Length: 171
Ligand code: AR6
Image (cartoon, rainbow, N blue to C red; front, side, top):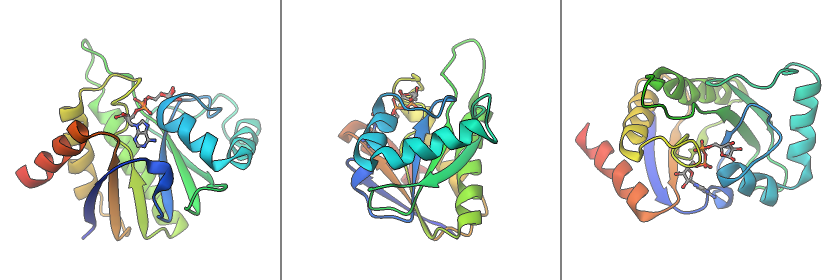
């Protein structure tokens, strides 16, 4: 069974096989985790994303899906880009958020990655409440059936870390 670990910090500094990026459909960068990954990883990642836009993902990467590129200068081998849903009060988009974790792990399995770092997808710019985002993240990873050995959630601040820790010990 997959071993789930937690760390507080910056996901661009974590030495793992694959780092998951909370991207947007354009795959061409943004703020938050996405901005940090492109900044630290260097232009190779953006080049690879542009190539994906010019080939398989002409219209962009759909919400809930995942695709891998090089990790450039990050201390990882791959970046797995996934597009979280924007949080909505009117519409339940939980299944799309779960799909981000599931699809990212499916891509990680294809790559043969043993260690994968995830941020709390959609809980920043996209406005998903942290507690619910943590619940979906932990439940989905636990039930994924992935061959990945370790999933490390990298939480940016202490409240996020505590929320994930509470979720893990509650279930
Ligand atoms: N390491 C770990 N976690 C981080 C880092 C970091 N370096 N930076 C932020 N976080 P966000 P989203 C946390 O906004 O909500 C971008 O512009 C942050 O505190 O990165 O999925 C994309 O291009 C929050 O808890 O992603 C998209 O347009 C979590 O990571 C859009 O934002 C996710 O925050 C995606 O929004």
